[in-house]
Length: 163
Image (cartoon, rainbow, N blue to C red; front, side, top):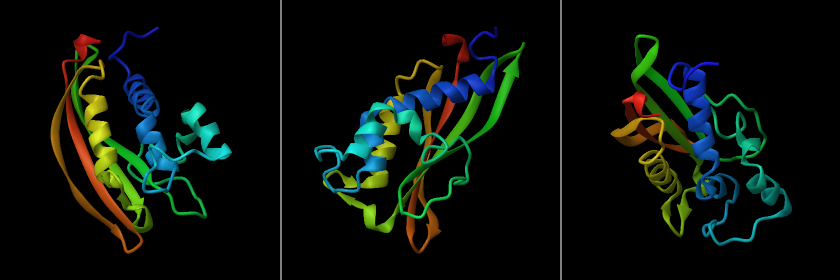
């Protein structure tokens, strides 16, 4: 069995677990209503809230591109990992980008722009993740297409020895 910090797969799995454990993020991905935090979920949404791992590889992806195909507009969180460095078989640092892509019709919420809300939640979640020290790197808007809006947030991950 590998020690934590040795496997990039383990790092990615822990990051996924942190995202799916945040109910606010999950609600923002599945409930279109402007007051998604206080809206009573449908039966289908309740199933996802009880098992948010159902969104992995459908709306939450560890790749930069959206790899799931769907017929309905929905928000996505994709990611990119780069500049990971090892020393003596252990990761010392790396860079992660989260890309939040939302349909234009999902933009407005009671909590501001939906992608800002999601990125704020990611920022709060990864400020105390326990994988290492997550240090905010940058954040901004990005072009997607005429039907979707995009925003990204990135972190330098430092000090994997703190696992």
